[in-house]
Length: 599
Image: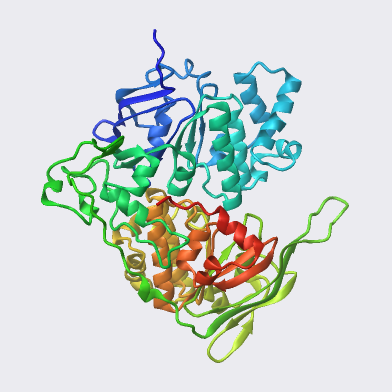
């Protein structure tokens, strides 16, 4: 048999169920050391496509047509037993949620050593050294200590790096990356992307990278495909697709990305992707397209060559520009202060059986004020104290020193350190939205029950009016009344996050605390959530603190930005001024790490 010149060949791949397709007629090839990117909204089929490249199918799905070949050998149709040495040894996957890659009852080092036992001929002592080398390679501090920890003892970013180390254990020829940098701060993200780029050039590892962050794909990939409703609607060299997008959907995706150099919010894509069980007869993007023509509703376009190596599935022959939303009317006008944080310090002590060490300061003498309707951005690396500040304001972390003062028109109240010691009216005034909506939404309760809780607790609302008020709150976050009768698991991640926002506003807060609430969302949903927070803050005169490791996201929504480093505020200024003319060296370094889309 003649071996293929390509490492990986995907031809006319179709994956789906009895009457629907999740992956629809996808084809591409990847050479040795080449990196191929796949972009698109949640539900477009990206992760399903990635799993199928290893011959893995989600429950209810199967390969209906097409082929996947690795070094000329077929992947599809083989048993799990036949693929046991291929998976991890020839082709390895880094999942979006790193926790799914690890057994929670085994130490990190033991699990990486298990991969080495399966995919290498190293003896026990050499395996132990290789485990440390892999952990050091992915920039984890103290490899020997990390190897001895359980998965739950690592942060999300550390666990992601450990998952990459385990994937590299078998020295695979093809690496599949499913949102590899989700949840990482910009400095760690930059270091990991440098590592992956180095692997490509040094070890000639081929890669397929799925990401909602086009900046990550721009840093890592040679070519890119954009997926929508299971199909590739645009494909070509990275620079060509990003600089000259031909499909309206690609243009809309690029418009929804926050830019460090641009003022104002990005433009969300109106509407939602179609159901895979009921696709339109014509172009699947037609119901959301700002440039739709009559023929688009009747004829589904094929993926055709529009330029050298650049393919587009669109009936239009001329490149047009999608309309841009003007957000200039959202400029903040200075208002009366609503909350003041004064010399706030938070420390955590390590305790043992015989020794109690002095508290280590996580937040050190932080001070700022916040006005009604203002959005303050907090940026910094993981461990800089951003989330701890929010938890202290919410009464979930006890400060070692400092004071939090809530101000109204006629009075100022110093808040008790513990939330349990605060009055009900004070608890209502400050609402925290968590990074992961699953942390605040009980999976056993319907959405109406979840939103009813703050309405009944704080609002003294008659039960007869609960549904109408809950429906109005969902309408403000752009969800229909039918959502009230669903369970959280029946919603997408972006929809669950909007429910969490609606529940926070049900309490009619004065201060809204947003802790990395857009980290795991694709760019179109992220743009919608950013616009939603800004609009609701202005409409209801609510002050908001928006925490993120992504400076471009914070730049788009914040009126002022505070930069945290090692628990201290090193710079605080107007958002535009800080990003254009940073003063502190650390702020300059953060700006330098922001991944921008090439023009």
